[in-house]
Image (tube, rainbow, N blue to C red):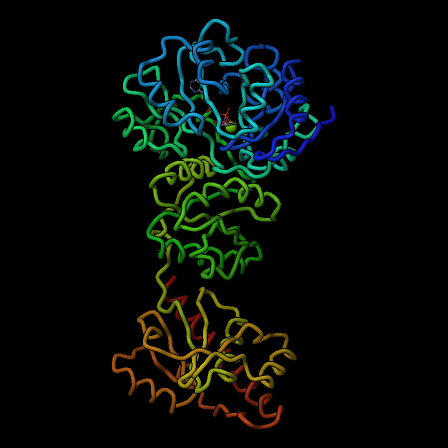
Length: 508
Ligand code: TXA
Ligand code: MG
């Protein structure tokens, strides 16, 4: 089967595209279309045969019921019975929108659509393309997420095609979705209503409208032995190909733990994937790092989650480590999906962060333009057993400047570079108990000790390396002087690396 792809803009809907989609759906075909949550795979909800096709295309177990989408509130009464009184208030607040409600089904709904259940899940999406498609199809469109069963839900038409090209009749490309996670499911057949799947509409938001609701206890955490009440929630869903592991703890520990894991994996030549945020991105130097959004606005994280998981399928990684996210607002839904993608694989950051005498090493010279940055880059290129942030600073840096050109030329000829270097002033933030400060000369060391009373872990490079070879100052001299300086630094830095590795072994 050839899948027709048609583009349309939700602010200026192409009526011809809608007409074509409506005709396919009324004839029992399958059309994927955008909703505000994720792309749905539409079929006529009142045709038993259409539901069968949906399960086949997705490779989905047929005991996993579909959500029926409507465009007009009056239509609810045709497919659901014994609708509880609070429904009107909920619909007035949250429909059209990312809320699915479960009711007893009416007789016109075939069991094929509800996976054999006497209840029906109903949603009225707010995306205008979705609403028009539903009306053109006759009013009742079943639509699971338009992915192959087990893969992350699609947030673009491209994702739909990755999974279902050639297996469905049509895809309407309406661009990226807004929310990025599936709707909240609220079971209205129990009192008080119960959240079966967390989403953009949270329990606090329900509470403001109808008072307290309950939450299916299986939603979060691997502790529960019970089966979730929404049949679809029991499957390992949204799964990327690589093993996904959630690292939990306070953010500082999470970053340290992931950095150590990424460094060890890098040394073995098997990079890991890392799910990071705007705020934490700069802390990761090793591994394949993807930015999922900003912690200041968790909606951005929701929107990018499935895309990032899909992108990792294109990378040669066996394991992906993710930071965890706050459980406020949509955070609960984010963690719920992340845990399902991880098959509930979680590790405690604090438990895996290894004790390390030093986590950061700073070389200090006077202007941070030649000796310091050279030594730092040399150490970064050593085989170190532990992961360190390696930096350099200067005692008199008035404004940031690139590295000395001769120093850069010498490093280049040795296959390294100072291209990204920008000189920075040393300050007391660089003096902490897990920071090793290596001064290029006695004079610099003494200056630090006099200026900062509490300075600890301050050594000269010679002292720490246990080698008194004098480090020449090439400043203002020809290139050869920089070459000589490089040779001395290289030998000293090698000794520093050996000493650090001995310290590391003592800590294993
Ligand atoms: O945001 C959404 O809800 C998207 C878009 C396309 O609307 N749809 C979606 O559908 O996520 P799907 O099929 O991927 O997930 C439907 C979930 C499943 O976990 C299913 O078990 C549950 O809804 N469900 C459907 N009918 C149910 C019922 N009668 N009782 C309990 N759970 C039900
Ligand atoms: Mg789904």
